[in-house]
Image 1 (cartoon, rainbow, N blue to C red):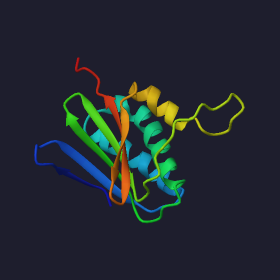
Image 2 (image 1 turned 90 degrees about the horizontal axis):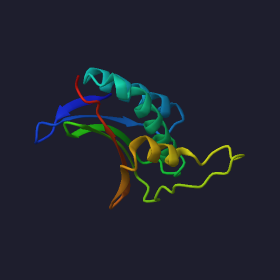
Image 3 (image 1 turned 120 degrees about the vertical axis):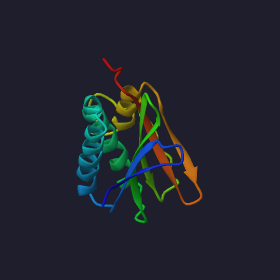
Length: 139
């Protein structure tokens, strides 16, 4: 069940624990889309859906079965951070997929959509991959 809370610095945060199952990718997309709409960031929903789909798919492929956490954070007023944490310390790798490849383009898409603002934090028993999207400038 998703929950939204305020962190110590009163920054919006929401997270969702998911099982290691293929349907969790769609659940992560729905969660991220709903949360961004709640925050009034409808313009980010499509890009965020692609990003969270790629990151959760990568998490499923690690073979880890301990935990997967999807989170959204507003570390600054002009940034939304998408986080996917899992119990594997296997680092994601951006591949150079050939034109006939049927996979391997995911992190390249994340890199392009975030303008290179993504990364990995290793934890004692896993990692968190984050990707930052700039919020639209208010009109």
